[in-house]
Image (cartoon, rainbow, N blue to C red; front, side, top):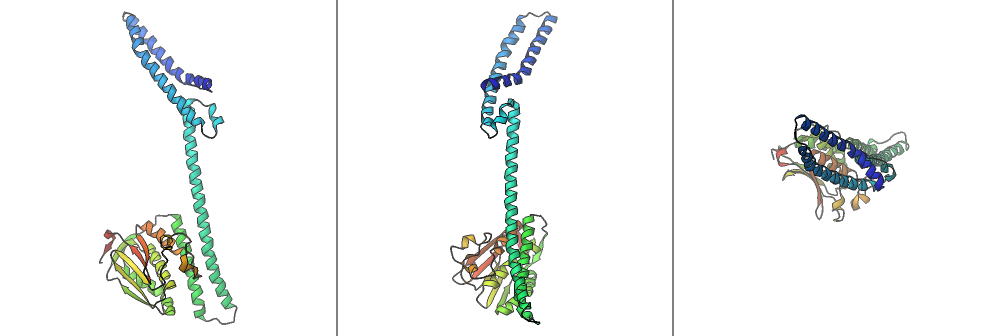
Length: 323
């Protein structure tokens, strides 16, 4: 291996040595034409040759070390026949190939996760449709109130599915503008009014004239998920929605969240102890809330007291006015 490397290095250094010889020959010719003494030519060799030899030795040692490192890579046999300069190119190509492989693995993992969450939400939608089909098969007439709950659940899961796909697409389609919170929350209360009436829950809203600078569509998605959770788990007769300390807060009187569940609330698919007692829980809502909030540059938090849960969307100071 050492003899092969030495031969390869000599091939690399040969053009430089030939160039040096040509320079010396040209210098000798010039000195002869001008009638200069040949001692000057000897001085030229004496002062330049040591520098050339020192550079060649240093470059030789550097190339040998680099070649030894490269040959420790997988695919060593393919590299043995390469010249020192080619080995550097091959190493660069291997690094690029390794980066490409890592990117492909990350992309495949992300694609697999998206398929899994689609399957989960599609399964939940199918369950709601199966429930509707079962009600329809019981007789020629079906009470509309019997269909409301499974239809709402299917609509909620479909909203999650579409929101998740838009988030996964990672498209920068945000439209930031000043948004009046009272208007946005009023729309969501009207949309969920049937659930409020069904559960006997009264919404208490205190938002004054607060406006926030954000993407209204995605903020609506976030607040809808938090409001749905509040309605799903609330055991009291009131849900409070208010703005304080740069945060939009939705407070419900549902069961306390276990301390062991708190750090994992925003993990994908995590339902926690409360979710285990609710067949409608998929563990995807808060995960998508966190994903959307991160893209908007907002904070999101869920805290639990002795009784009750407060979900908050936290806005930067310069994105709030009228508070």
